[in-house]
Image (cartoon, rainbow, N blue to C red; front, side, top):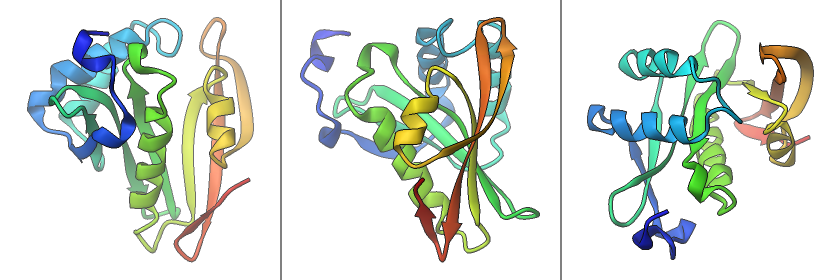
Length: 167
């Protein structure tokens, strides 16, 4: 963490849409979370994702303009779901509430689409508890689903009348 980031408070940050100039910053965020939260070989997949976004992708920016977190969502009109995708916070900024703020913002935006009846995500055992505290339910776990020791947890949150139903 550099000196200008030491006194960061989540309320001093703002969201904006991802722009191509954010590519390197977003890749650095991913890199800072390898190997605990992402496999090293996911970098190429994330790079491709950022070049062909399936839906809105946001960056959370410090007052000084540095990207601190990023994440998006994609609406699946055929089944009435929204998938939260590639959400992450710079590793040196974990524990400041940025992940919670990023997730809540993506939920808020996705449920504005009246077709959305469910919000879905796939994560590891390392962050499943975080998402459960935000109201998601684990519907399945695939042991070693991402890599040895990195399990895939499938999670859901129901949406009724444009409101997420926690728990």
